[in-house]
Image (cartoon, rainbow, N blue to C red):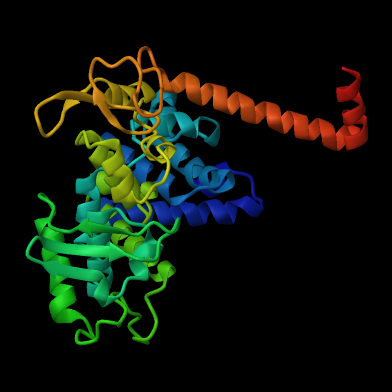
Length: 368
């Protein structure tokens, strides 16, 4: 039908190949051909195909024959546009799913526990607990796991910004992750008697750590396999990657109303701007409310946190006694806006100097 209704050309072969792929995906997901799919199954197939293809040409060649199939099956134009919009409205379709810019923790957990290889399953369980960067995890050695009377800790010596930190592993809600990791650490590690050995070594060469791209491929392979039978994983498939563990952990700490200084130490950040960057779905006024509205310290006194120096000050204080910041009607959004305006003016000034020349610019300043 498709070859009869379409003009011959170089794109026919590509579109037929995409159509065969859609038929294969439909049989893998639902066990039936395209002509037997229901309205809800067409919606799931649409979500899956839009996560498979990225470029505009690939999306057009994939959905064009499917739109004709829907037309032959009796769907009207509005339903076809809703199911398979062209790239000009792909952004609207992605927003239709109301996806936040982070993956919920339970979705990541299902993908992690479905990983077949023991080393990668233990690696991502440790990432899920600590929210550390993939580089920090792969460069850990067995001596970085510390066990004492207080619990089990991981010490990060090699970090991106040089800040060393120790993170406890026995958090409530992560018992299964810790069990998987400890099973690898004590029982399945190939070089368990050597404290200087890599915590996650390469399987073919124990003297080298596991490459980051190997871990990435293991996670994506497990996510794609899980997406075939799990609707939630399929919805977030394009967002699942190793660094997403760090974003999700940052969200969990913010939603748990952690002190901002504790979050910065836990995640290994030097500036509070990183908290705002990693929780970009969080409105700035909500972060402001978390920092300003006040909490109780260990003695039961009402306190609040200074946004500039992160010191605990009395809840009725109008100025920070440590840095002098005015705490009444303080607006983080206004500060960020002014900072961005200064940076923009600086870039414009540098561009003017480059175009007019430093000497001409100097003469202009002296004359004024």
